[in-house]
Image (tube, rainbow, N blue to C red; front, side, top):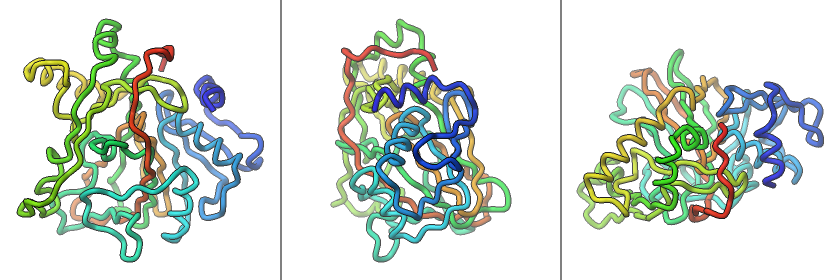
Length: 304
């Protein structure tokens, strides 16, 4: 699979027609580092093994896949997610679709105090085995606004100076759900609630592409274990700001029926809440992943 991912990464054409999954399926890159829009594929229909492999490798290479004009039932969306792994159950989010514990309802309107994903993060990185990926299907969008930004953590790592890369390779950081979830969903009075906490590498090796990616985020990362508190705060502040560099990003404008499938191992995302009091509504499934690892034996690629 790594060879296929490398082929994707080395491709320079903006539009690619992938052989073996139908001549009408086209992959169009959005930016050099992040994002591919795929047309000609019906996500409600069963996917064959070859198509799944191509999507897995396009995802690992580009971080996020976009699809337009999709119609899926909740069961079809869960079936799509299961093509890539077992589905994940969120440890804290309260708005779950009736009869579908694997599906989160992503909604905002005039009554909202928060929206899901309103700062840069990787989904549920506080889990011991954080999610591999997330599939969001948008049903209602505001007349204007509500875009989602995605940033490549491959590009973020590669753009660091070599002394900084050498320093953070092999370091680990604490990701704490308590830091973000406590009180956010009206659960502050529930003293019995326990949220996940895990220690992960600051730089991880992607299991498909073999590339190195930054793996710290504002939502969950609270401390770099090998540093003093003061040193950790300083370095995390630098990395958090660095991650937001516009050149690492793509920006997706949602339409009704749009789908985004992002790889939590190599991108972070930020949902813009610039449409209050308009309504935005979608359904999300998340796919289980493995514990992140840093592999010093795998050669680091520092080209974007």
